[in-house]
Length: 425
Image (cartoon, rainbow, N blue to C red; front, side, top):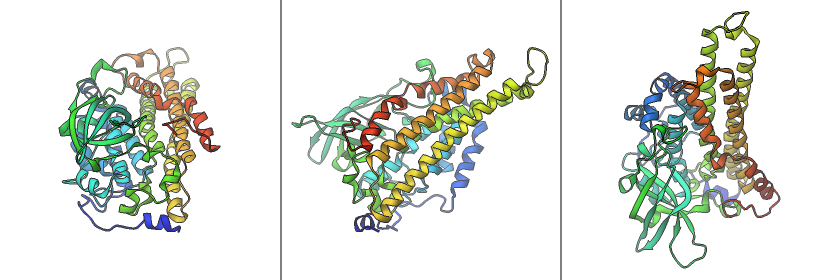
């Protein structure tokens, strides 16, 4: 093991907050998500109208351990690996894609705090009981004005998915000062110090109506200096990470290198693939219970046209899930490689995971198209599940991160060592 990696991977055994279920396994966590599928489906319409899942569902998510899945064990988390987390979120999303998006986009970020914030900050942010959940809106939509001991934060950040049941908010901001361009940072603000705007749920958006993607407003809130970190730490060039991160040094787990491009897009694809899987489930029910309209009249599942659609959509969804899981395992392999021999987790590899996931999302969308086209106009009526899932996938497709052609050239530039032109690199 390289000396720098060995130093950065030093193991900490101290427990600050106890783990609720010390013997919980990844298999059981995933099984709990699967078990909630019928209830999530039964509550889809209410959750969409509300703009997020219910308080009762939140309590079930808490008890199941979903919010703690990738949280450091030192602070009461289970510290499961990246593939386990996204398989769990996929199963939640198969019950309701909007609820899955809401949960994924707040439950994934304890991993980010555990990677890039200092021990002092982690002790406070994961306190007083080990619960931490937060959306992260990376664009610098606010300002951070330096004052004694910290910063004054203000701004409005839209699309803060997962904020309804979060404890905190993480947002990008520009430091007010003389430098041009001003440095960008990520700031953590307690939810109690901000205003959640009433701009999500119901007919306000085409889809993902239960994703809790409300805007938040922060009005001149002081945060201490250790709640603020440089914005480029999550995707910067590898040269700056040879000694690891605060998280690798604190927790002894190379997963906390916190190279986020792949995991961040996994957070978008898991709910999208969940929508495609849910649509396939609904389509199966349709073709098993309805006959063909034209002779020879038979159960639809026995007719080659419906068999073809079911098989094609299933294969596309399987391919999407294969990429999702492969990217998760590849992330873990890159981190272990760094811990073993000091090989950097490069910018090209970081962007490459993102690009992989974009194509996983594309395949999930194609699976949804097949099902939507084969389900007949009855499935397009308001309130039908396939109609809901189609709208949810459409929201993913419009996301800036889903535009895979826009990321192909930056990936090539990173490979050849050129200026990437993505996030300022």
